[in-house]
Image 1 (cartoon, rainbow, N blue to C red):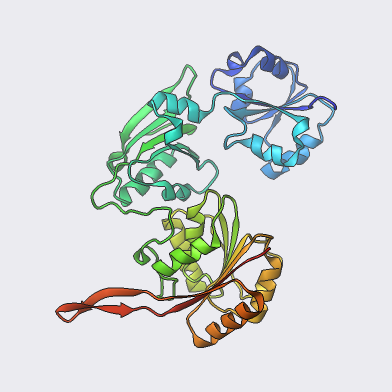
Image 2 (cartoon, one colour):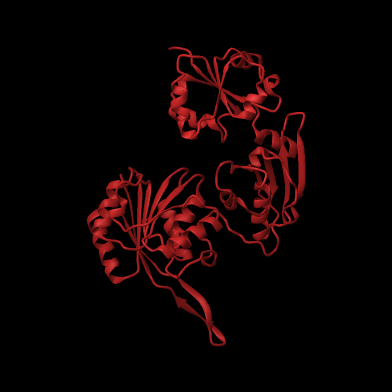
Length: 400
């Protein structure tokens, strides 16, 4: 087996001096060095050909492959495999062609500066990603370390915290960690006003006020948290539905007839990097779903205009499918064919006609057929009484 031709090197603020002797030799003897302006500055004084990140960035893999046969180094910040370019390259180029040279990550440095155990906190990145995705992690007493996307990001996150009743949360911005220009900015979310360097790491200790919004990642959020026209899957039924769909890390859900997006959003919140495509023909409902996704920390909800089964063709194959409206024999056939092995299919119905269809499908295909009835205590004159919500028939099936 030939030696790896591509070296991905993590570098810190201390530049070449912070590398081990063996890794420094790899960088110093490279023929081509690829990285951002900051990386090239940290590794100054070398004779290798310098290459900047390509634009668009998606061209990076083809560019690297064109250098095969030469001694190539890619410079990254800290640990190349922790929210960094190394993971992306590793998915496209065989592992036996790459050697990784990790440096201390920003998370490790920030954890040490804060005196926090890394086993007891959440590590997040909003670098080059929607900042709103961190909202799902705002929980009482949670500690967050966040790779930011620029100098404005801490103020945005401070606003998210304050709006949700976590304005007393201490925030610390750490910049240039490990270098001669290392700086630190401390403050409170509700009064945050610091101007900070663009390249920074944010530490947040979430402190909840008595009236703070409690938005757990377990499915079953209060209906009032969603903007809706009243047709959404209600709280108790939604919790059961998402449980049957079984959210998993990185898995993809099709939410057919997504309405306000409540099921898709809860799916995405329930597992790290879970994805969802919401299929909804009405413009007003797609707008509501988009607003709900931003407000509840699922900004990557992908919304598609169209009706099943026609719109399903060409979509990425899902790991789970939910049909909350517009169920038909044709929709089930198209969805079932697209569903991956071990995929989960769940459909809910409230009308007699849809219930009859689910009953017929259950008879022919098996699975579980369940009726879900929910009663809530509500005022009845000067007293209280039970008010029944519409009974939901649910059919669920696992693809073997």
